[in-house]
Image (cartoon, rainbow over all chains, first blue to last red; front, side):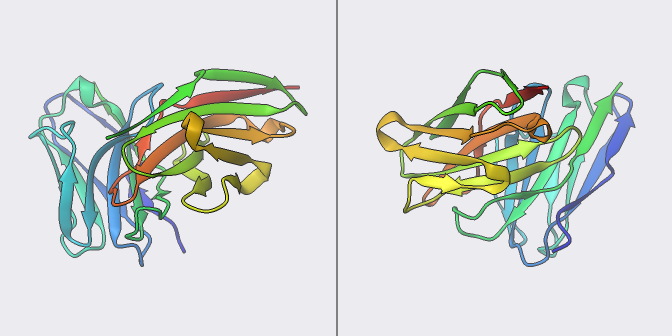
Length: 114
Length: 113
């Protein structure tokens, strides 16, 4: 168990630029989640995949956000035309399928939009 | 729909004192309940979980929590605080057939020497 890996750890970008984050889940986990965390708040659900299928997306996930998990392994989260309000920690987590399985989180990607 | 309320955004205790972090949940289905801890610039680490069975759940680092259905609560306790317990703690809920965890806003625990 090498844990959930996220890359990069930090990203600073200018408003209007596109950014992409990568998440490598624990290898035997078939569920993968993206959460966003802002200062003073708990993680907010963005989207999740079971294998390669994206099964749910939050209303928080505007049209500028897109997530993929092409082969059911790693996932990418892309934000187009970034805005200052996108500045946050983006957390990836993975788990086995049952709802009572705990999520295992990566260390996150901290995005700063200037 | 599910939601979590954590009472107290900041809790301060002396080293060796009892730690009590409060969590109340709302769920339309039988809940699964979790406590996570987050250290600065790190992801969340599972402390303990309640799914079914015994309502008093023991976790790592000496923490435990009790599921009280009548009070819709899942408070986290530790008999004796240690300096290394200083962190932010999150309560979360999902449910049977649920697909995601819903988190509370978190409680920052400060431990004074």
